Amino acid sequence: MKKPIFYHAGCSVCVSAEHDIVELVGKDKLEIVNISEHRNRIEEAEKAGVKSVPAMVTATGNVLHINHGASMAEVKA
Amino acid sequence: MKKPIFYHAGCSVCVSAEHDIVELVGKDKLEIVNISEHRNRIEEAEKAGVKSVPAMVTATGNVLHINHGASMAEVKA
Image 1 (cartoon, chains in turn orange, cyan):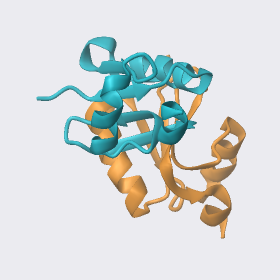
Image 2: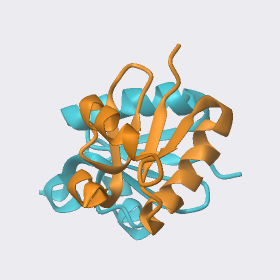
Image 3: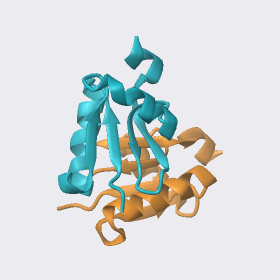
Image 4: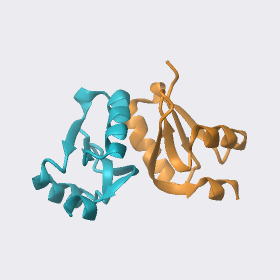
């Protein structure tokens, strides 16, 4: 099965959510992508339906937007 | 350790998020509370910092607001 992907942008809201999610789901069961550092993955995240970060794309392709750190427009700015 | 609590209100956004979260975290590691049905738990959720549902209160007391189904005001209405 595909791993869920947790996208974040390094902001404080993101880092806090990342910590909680890793705690809940387990680090080895997740792929964690900082799209501020890996900007080539912004397009992939948007195609998956990510509107803001932090967000998790589940193995089945659903997008869970968690709290609200930054919109994709802000990440790209 | 305290179990994380997933609060929802039975709305379609909630049910979809619930399914994903149970899949990710495991049903036995979560308490799931439908605050539309168990209205006596609304106060507890608000005290924990829940502003909208679905939301998860982690074992350490952090609140993860997931997507946005309904505000607490809407749940109480």
